[in-house]
Image (tube, helix red, strand yellow):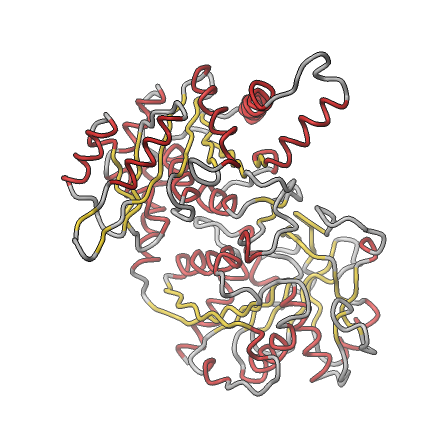
Length: 536
C-alpha cells in the first residue's frame, strides 16, 4: 500500500496546539492498527534547536539517537509510546545547508538554483524517502509556524505539490475567539486563515477550531458554508481537562471515520483494549483517587514550556498511581541569598530540581536542596539537579565548604562536579554534548534506583557536559552519599542517593522517556514517596 499523508497547518496564532492535534491524529491511526509516524518542519535556520535559549523556543527534546529536536517530538512520543528518530525533524537550516552543499558539489550544474523547483523538490524527496525507509502507512506532517509566515511559505508550497502526487489530507488548525462584549463565537479570524490557505493553493479537508468552549451549531454552519465543506468537517477543539483526552474527543465527533475515508484506508477494527486502557488513564488523570503537591524548581519557570517533559512525566506517574499532581513552580533565582521564606514548601510532598546551564539560580537550587534534605521532603534531581545535590551534600555533610561545579565555581577548591574528559577538546556547540541514550548499571539492589527500575541494567537519555568528579567518589562515599548507578564501564557516576529518606539524583533526563502508557520509573517512585508523606 502506498504511503498516505496528513498535513497539519496552523493559521493566525502560534501556540494553539498543532503538536497535540498532530499527536491525536497519530494516536487515532495507531488505535486502528496503522503504522503512523510524524514529520515536523521548523522554519528557523539553525540546524536544530540545541543551541537555542529555552525562553525563545521552549524545551530542547533529545532522542535516543542524540538528535536535539523540537519539543513537539516529546508530545509525539508520549502519545505514540514509540522512540522516534532525528531524521523526522526537518529544519530550514538542514534544507538550505543541503541545497548549498549540493550546489557546491556540482549537483545542479548548468541550472539556476531556486526555491521552486529545487528546494520544494528537496522537501518532497526527503518526505518520500522517510516514508519508504520507515515503511509507514501514514506520515503526519506538522508545519511549524502559521500560514502567511515567510519562514514556512516554501514548505507549504511543497505540501501543495505533494498533494499533486499522493493522497494528502490537509487539516487547518485555527483560532475561534469569543468576545465577552458580544458573547458570541467570532468566525472572521478562521475565515481569514482559510482564505490565506486558499491563496496558497490548499483547500483543507478539515478545519479544527481551537476555542475555550464547545462550538455552537450556528458557528459550525457558518464556517462550513464559507469553507465549502460539510459541518461535520468543522472540528471542535475545545479546552480539555487533559490533553490526552483529545484523541477520544475527536473520535466522539466522528473525525476518525472521516479521516480514514479521506485517506482511502480500509476501516479496520479499533483495538478496543488499547482504547480502553487509554481511556482509563485519562480517567485517572481527570478524576484521581488522591492528590499530592510537587514543587518543580528551575531557572526558566516563567516559561513553563521549558520543562514540558518534567510536567508531563508527573502527569504520567499520576495516571499510573491514580494520583492528581498539583504543581508549584519555584524560580530558583529567588532563593539565591538564603534568606527567602521557605514556608511555600510547608505543604509540598516532593521536590524536583531540573536541568539547566549557567550560574544564575544555582545557589538558590543548592539552598532548596538543603531544605528538602533536612526537612525530609522526597527529592528527585535531574542532570543539574543531581550535580547540585552532590554540591549541597559535599558542603553541608562532608565538610567541603567551598565545594562547587567547575561550570560556575572556578575559584572553588573542591570541584566535586567537573567537565567531562571527552568535552575538554570540544570547540563547537551544536550537537557536541554527551547526548542521547546511554547505558547504566545499578549494582545496589537496596537502592531507590534499583527498586524503581526493577533491573540492574537500564538506558536513559542524556544532555550534559559536566559530571561527578571521580576524585571525590571515596570522600563523599565515606560521608554517606551513595553512588547507586554507573556507566557500564564504571567510569562515570549516573545516580546518587542520600543515605536515608527518599533523595535521588540522576545525571540523565528520565523525563524524556516518559510516556502516558509507560511512565518514567523514577517519577512513579517519587509520587509513591510523596503519597506516603501526604498520608503520614
